[in-house]
Length: 212
Image (cartoon, rainbow, N blue to C red):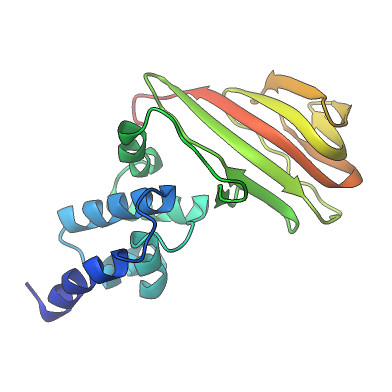
């Protein structure tokens, strides 16, 4: 074992002592560390392969930060595992996921713009179905809005504000209490922020492929 490897292994328990053992971030960090150690890689080696700083990777492994989806994808490529592998132990340990207000895992989705916040409130992949519930907050106007297109179906429930939400060639005006359920393989997204701040729930459900 190299000196740098010895130092890294020695420091990990101390770093974890102040972490929140029940958090999703801690569970993800433990999985990242376990996969890294299975490949006999140091923090510096994995950080280089994932195009991260060693400090950021250390924070992720110790549950001290919420990694973005893009970061998890980079780590999955570097470790040769699917992104969903980082969540599996968390799901195995719990039959229910409890998230305190404001503590959802912040996710940077493709096309995310300034003022668009996505908080993942839970994650399940039981059997062949994956479910991803998000709390979405839009707090700043932007000239360009992201359009998403992905597998599965999506359900929106409006909590606050007013938004024009596009699905295909049609736009729906959503106000508090309104809901929208649609096929998610059609381009969709907010295209008219009518009254800010805007908050709504988004629940995405899709079938898992055999490679996941």
